[in-house]
Image (cartoon, rainbow, N blue to C red; front, side, top):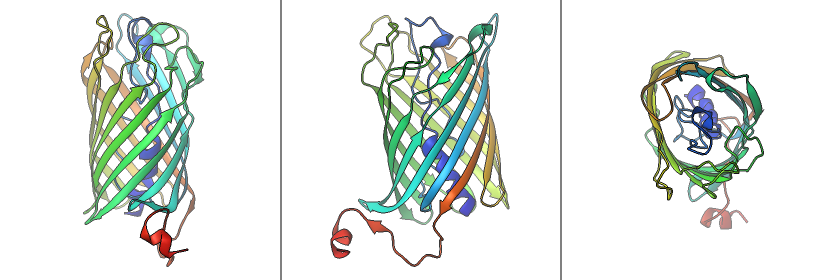
Length: 297
């Protein structure tokens, strides 16, 4: 169970990625600010032990955009602070992420740059019997990197997890809202929904199981905008080395709409606890609001 909780750290940070509008002409369309599939394999609804975590999620994908493929590499270095504070009965977590991205659209020379930083907070409730739910709210800051999503947006995430009996059964719904739907180059940034799904099981230090994700653009006020979407499935293998956890998974599109071709993507994630409160600590979690807070004064 300890390994599963540590792995949750990356579910908090797997929310900060950029779209790749190079798959179509820039004025026509762009994708979601949160890369579909980033949170799969992680118990995003469960509580994370109090501590500070460094997490890096890296992925490399190839999309079959004929006549030449489109490649992209994304790295998500992040810090996650699982605070000792309660709010509305939930654990409060704070997240900061700075993506770094490189891409080669349709065989052209690689472009690289800094993606949109994400600053976010999450509330995670322990419902008992290994069930948990969480809500994350964050904001993507605007950037000047022209080949990536540039406009600021808000991100909401709703997750539910069951982590009993060595299982990780998780659904994580991501809802993004752009503050300005038109890019500096005249492209359209649609609001979006992403759904990441996980069904893995632990065997000792190993973890294996199927994963899947789906994404869709939401309707816009632009009648000529062509919405994008995809469904992908894959498999995950993880190993708990003790304080450090590794996960690797591969996903492949089975359905895509207006991305120009199907994508195959490999993912690698490492989670390193910089500091983690002992699970045997006698001190209770400190509330930041409510009767418990008043009693502690």
